[in-house]
Image (cartoon, rainbow, N blue to C red; front, side):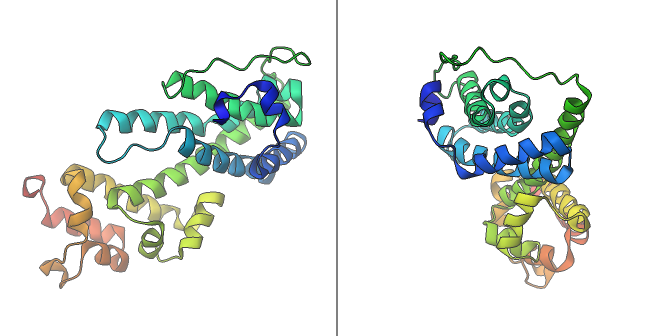
Amino acid sequence: MLITWSLDQLLAETPPPSVVIATEALERASRTQAPSDVGAFVRPSLEWLERATEIVYPKPSDRQSGEAELLWQAFSLAVEQTPLQVAFSGWRLRLGRQGVWVAMVDRLRELASEYGVVDVVPLGPTRATASPHPLDVGHRASAELFTLIADELKRMVGDQSALNEIRDVLRLSETELGDLLKVRRQAVAQWRRRGIPSERADEIDQHRQLCRYLTTAIKPERIPAVVRRSVPQLGGRTWLEALREEGPVATHERFKAVFSYQAF
């Protein structure tokens, strides 16, 4: 497994294409402080980290306990902050371009050990490298870059979280999620990579608020069946069909008028 490799093994390995792209973008962002370059660093970083997390710590199945789900969510949230730590990692300072790759794996390794996924020790220095020390974020240029990366992470992780919450609460596939939002599945994938368009942000948040209401009004495990059931008050439509046709605000009001927790 990748996170059990030694530092020498990592240095001998060619980084994945997404990490190479992220490395090049981070080098540009360090020079330009341009938001576009920052985004070009954060996006592929998160994409690789997501794929690596699926291997290192797969999401618990529905049959596992709620505690297992909460632990996995905490691990995933910690992983999502990795790009910020990578940008100012001592590995980058000591190893240059290779340092981004090593820093990503080292952070994943650290979190996997912290959350009890695998028992590994921190990466040690090779003969050619000293122990890593963080870059100085007190320097004005570094502080500006730190803020830009933090803001981009907040935006992108927030967008991902909203889409995931809607999908998971309603138990939708990516295609069904796109259908609900009246876009193609490819558009949903693009939103995940580039962020939700500003003109759709309020609507997505309204969908998210509706899903949060449902988890308090209905037992969560029953929500998928409830929203797929034909309802006389909706003219035989399902709640999902009403949600797509009428939008989250109107459907939210309908839910509140019809349902109570006791009914479920």
